[in-house]
Length: 369
Image (tube, rainbow, N blue to C red; front, side):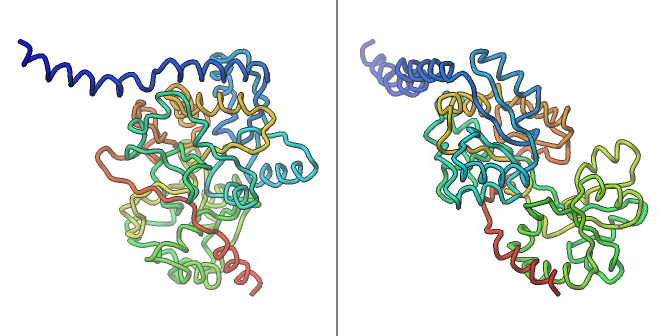
C-alpha cells in the first residue's frame, strides 16, 4: 500500500503548484489591490478606433467595473497619434491606453518617440498570463523588445488587393505581378490612410518575392491613382472607375449591398503567405506617464481576458463588420467572418514591426518624379 501511494503523492506534489500558482492568495490580493486603487483614480482614458472604443466594448467593461469610468477619445490612427504627441509636448498627458491598427505608423512612431511604457509587466489575470490560451502558445508583441505593443488581433492577413468582379476575372490572376500588367495601366487605385500611408506597401516591400521593385513599378509605371477617402476608394472600385484597388476597405459590407467588389483569395496570389502581420491587425499599448496607471492596468487585463476578447471579437464581426479574429484560442470562432478566420490546423507565422521608413522614402521619391 505504501509503495503504491508514493508515486501518487509525488505526482500530487508535482502537479499542485502548477494548478494553484495562477490562483495564489498573493496574486489574488494583488489584483484586488489594483482594482481598489483604480477605483480611487475613478477613470481610465482610452484612445483609439472602434476596435477599443466601440460603445458595446465600453459598456461591457463598465458593467464589470462600475467604479471606473472610461473616458473615450475615438478616431483614426492618423488623427490621434499626432494629437497625443502634440498634447504631451504641451505638458498634457491625456491618454492612458491606446489601441489601433498596426499597419499604420502610430505604434512605430510612439515607440521611437519614447511614448510607451512596457505593457508586459502589467499582465495579472491568470487567463491572460497563461500563454497556452494564445496562438502558438505564446503572447505576441509587435516590437523587437517583446513588451510594448501587444498583438491581440490574430486575423489571417488578407491579400490587400481588391477587384471589380464585373471587370476582372479572378481566375486570370496567379501573382501580385499580374496587377502590374500593361492591361491595367491607369485602372489601378490605392487607398492611402491619411498620416499613415499604406500598410500593404510595407508588406510588399519586405516580401522577398515582390520587394522594392514591385513597389517601384506600381508607383512609376501604372499611372496609379491614390485616394485618401475610405468610402470614395470603394465607391470608385464598385462603379468601375477603377478595376483594381490596393488597400480598399469595407468591401465585405459593400458586396452585401450588391456592389461588385471582392478581395482576391490567397490561392490567386502565390506570394500571399499564411501569416499574421502588423498590416491591418490591431495592437494594444500603455501610454507612459499615464494619469490613471492602475485603471489602465485593470482595463488592459480585462480587455485581454477571455471575457474581454469574446466581447471584442463579437463586436468587430457583428457591429463594426470588420473581419477580426482574436489571438486567443480559447474562445469560439463561429462569429469570425471568413475573410479573417484562421484555418484549423494551419501553422501561422506572426510578423512584428517592419521599418516603414525605407518604403516611405522610396514612395516619396517616386511621387516627386
